[in-house]
Structure formats: C-alpha cells, structure tokens
Length: 214
Ligand SMILES: Nc1nc2c(ncn2[C@@H]2O[C@H](COP(=O)(O)OP(=O)(O)OP(=O)(O)O)[C@@H](O)[C@H]2O)c(=O)[nH]1
Ligand SMILES: [Mg+2]
Image (cartoon, rainbow, N blue to C red; front, side, top):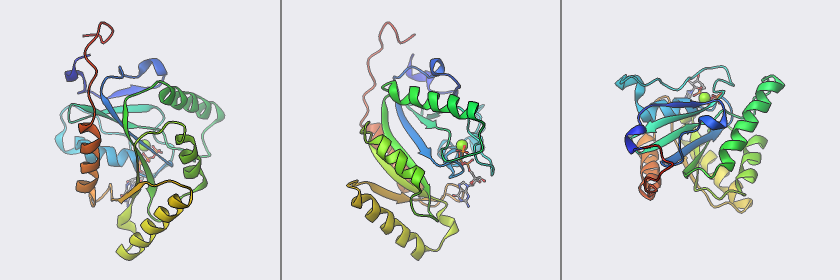
C-alpha cells in the first residue's frame, strides 16, 4: 500500500477488513457516548471540508459505533474509532461480535502510536474505565487520558476533576498525562493535536514490501 492510500476511511466489521498495518494508528477508546466519534470528526474536519469523506457517525444514543472505523489523518496516520464499552443494551450477539473484533484488533500487532482513553469530565473514572486500564497493562501502548465534554462544567470543577483522576491513576501506579477538551466546542483541541503530532512524528513507516500491495 502506498502512503496515498491513507485517504479514504475504512469500516472494518471483520478482522480481514483492517487496512494493512503500515501507517501510524491513533486509537480512541472509551465508554459509549463519551464523544469519540465527535472528536474524530473535529480532528479530521470532514464536516467542514466535505472532500468526499464521510464523518464518523455520532448519536445521542449510546452504542452508535458498531465496527472499527479508520479515518485518514493528515494523509499519514489513521484515527481509529472503536465501539464504546459500558453499554448494556446491545443484544448478546452484537456484543460477542464486537468483542471478537476488538480482541482481533489488539492482538494483531497494529502500529498503535497512541491510545487515547476518552472519559466524561463530569464523572470520576468508572469501573469499565478501570477494566480498560488493567487490560491495557498487557500491551504497553503510549497512553493519553483525555477528559471530554469540559464545556459542561466550570473551570474550577474541571481542574478538580483533572487532579482527582491524576491522583487516582497514581494510586494505582499509573503515571499518565491527563488532558481536557470539548470535542463539541473545540476547547483544548490545539493542545490535543500537539500530542497527536508528537506521537505520529516518532513513527517510521516500514519499507514497502512484496506483501504491501503496491
Ligand atoms: N456537550 C458536549 N457534548 C458532546 C461532546 N462531545 C460529544 N458530545 C455529544 O455526546 C453524544 C455522543 O457522542 P458520540 O461522538 O457519538 O460518542 P461515542 O463515544 O462515539 O459513542 P459510541 O459510538 O456509542 O461509543 C452526542 O450527542 C455528541 O453531540 C462535548 O465535548 N460536549
Ligand atoms: Mg462512536
């Protein structure tokens, strides 16, 4: 695959639909409805640009994203939109299919340069967030905890929440960066983008080989 192939979004409903693992991947994980798809749309700017790209599906109803979506980012990386967790209403069949898909993704040695763990700034970390964290311990990805929907609380509450979460993480031996933004209103996006830039800049694309498809 040539780098020009990172121009169209890819929807993977099955593990054989993932793009070749040749470009840096920035993964967005978090509880359902926390704003992962909204944030990806802000970052890619597809709503504004049009450009023949589809925006990530966003909904007020949890459980909206039901596949793994890869969105091109600056023609040199993928933003990977995962289905959210913590949504109890999916039928068992859907839940099982998605859990196999996620398992397949994380076991496929993807070139993940950053895992963005998105949480709702209004609440402390939830049990499902802690489950993600303990599961991630096995993988050692570069990790960034990001508080979203910060437009919904005052600056002082946001600061308090940030400190609380940082303290809770340290309490469990996790020394992670914690950043805050509003995917809807755009606050905090410049700083967030600089984290993505750093992550992607450190990535060296493997040389084209016979199996890269061009
Ligand atoms: N106020 C506010 N609302 C937001 C923000 N970000 C997202 N939302 C809203 O939250 C809802 C869920 O957003 P999505 O982007 O679909 O959430 P998701 O994490 O992709 O959800 P799943 O696909 O179910 O995992 C939508 O109604 C968004 O408009 C934000 O920063 N502030
Ligand atoms: Mg979504």
